Length: 465
Image (cartoon, rainbow, N blue to C red):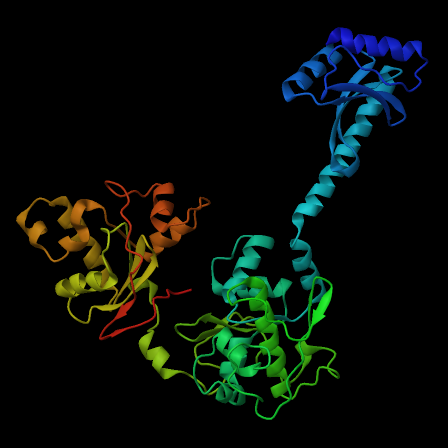
């Protein structure tokens, strides 16, 4: 290797530094030395060498040739190039290395700018103070904030203040539909899910539309650009796909505005439109409880903005009281929420359990009717586990939950501490183990079929947000 580089250098000086092609003794079908110019200096391009061979060439060059420099740069089409570059003097060599560092910095900045990707869209939306439209979008905004802005604030009120700095105008179409009598009436006072709203309000576009006309209002024509072509009716997606959900949300918002009498041709500033003012910056904080947060003040509005409060939803989904809540994780396999409720009710009474809601297949929230029942349960659990081989522990109603010593329990504050760790795992049991809270003999998963149970009736298995 040293001889090959020396031969190239000698030939270069002999030819008066004119460009010529050199093929050394290591030449194969894939390995060549070829003379070119880099920053106006004669250079040897190294092609087809392994990383080990390149390290050897670098060592030989730096040790035995003071007027040669080994550099690694990005060439045309962002292809990495390894070069041996001839320099006239020490100062020229220093100048070369500074130029190489400048090129490497420029390339790194271009890579960073390219990697930022969608962040540019977020920054542009923020700087232009555009109206952000979503459907039941509190969690969507929380994800956007955590991925593109910074760590989420600890409270909803702090989050409201922080998110308004980046997105001062937000409208939730679910709030809009539920709070406006005319729009809610069109939904037949039923579900206001995104797919249902899209089918009802945008029947020419939405599959399974229920009406040929929306309360006598003309339909808004929605154009979508896909692959440099525009389509007035775009129905190539499916719900729960991000792009198509955004299309449905935009269509629902456009038609809702038309129903409210908003003329897009004459409106220049939607966030300031008086017909939308009462709905802007109001988001559902918890759809189970119908709580709405006002981003302007950070305060929770318990009642809906309009008269369309669904009392059956409030009855079936009682307010989640954190101080009354215990988290169980790692219980025995195939143990259902109904079984957990039955065991606990045998011990603490029929009305002691308000709700059981699974967090994932390894964990479930249990909400007691009274705060003192939390400490009673945790103390009883510890007592039974200390004497797990006694007749009382074996025959106790809680033995079905505690069987095997795998179950763990904690209050809501410990749940926040576990989730607040910088470590991140998919399942809660794995998260708890990662931060140092481990079951006695390992993790046993809760069955996927776990449902939420409330006294005398079964409800949705969705957990609090």
